[in-house]
Amino acid sequence: MKYSQLHDWIEASPRTVFFGGAGVSTESGIPDFRSENGIFKALEKYGRSPETLLSHTFFSMRPDVFYKYYRENLLITEVEPNNAHKALAALEARGKLSSVITQNIDGLHQKAGSRHVLELHGSIYRNYCMQCGKRYGIEIMQQTEGVPRCECGGIIRPDVVLYEESLPEGVFEEAEEEVRQAALLIVGGTSLAVYPAAGLLNSFRGSHLVLINKSETPYDSIADLVIREPIGEVFASFLMCPF
Image 1: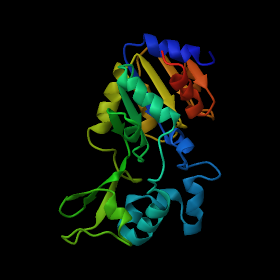
Image 2 (image 1 turned 45 degrees about the vertical axis):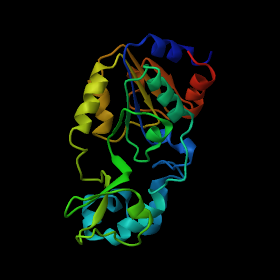
Image 3 (image 1 turned 90 degrees about the horizontal axis):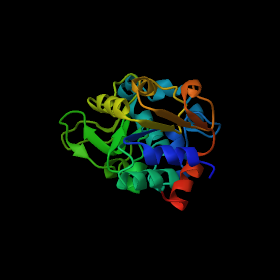
Image 4 (image 1 turned 180 degrees about the vertical axis):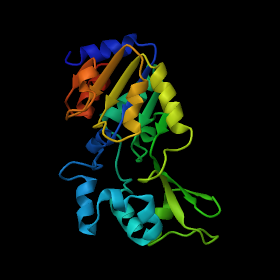
């Protein structure tokens, strides 16, 4: 089998962790950030860099522009989990996957059935009032225009991490511990260029590191197995050929 080494390592591993990025969801129809048709490309019509438009400073100064972009490009819900999401959920159900650590905010891992998901950058499905703290679902963003307001008058913002903001308290620490305890770490669909998330790999002390990404990453040279193919295609083999 083409991916027999990966299959064998998962079967033998006492604790496996998956860490993924935008590339995990592209096969579900969600654009990534840096490709020719990615989210960063869509930002050009705003005349600002992504680091500016998606920053805490810009959100505070021009929430009207931020929410226009947010609804057009990030509030994507009419998509379904692909083979990667489904296979990871199946592995967890079998007790072969400890956790999923994701940089994505789309909720597709949970939609596929994964239960232990650590969302480093938050989720579009969670929102809160910046003034009183009241929590809202995704409907508040879908059913309003302009800047969404709480009944108290405060601005409702998505529970996602913007540039200049820290990762959610406790989530990164838990992710570090998951990576530290893993015997097998599978990293997929990420260029490993965004920190501090990419720095998680420095905590790995296990037996095998596997990188699945269509392009090179800074960690390829230390990986035990590098697969440069679409991640959904790789994990489709797990669905077709169960252990």
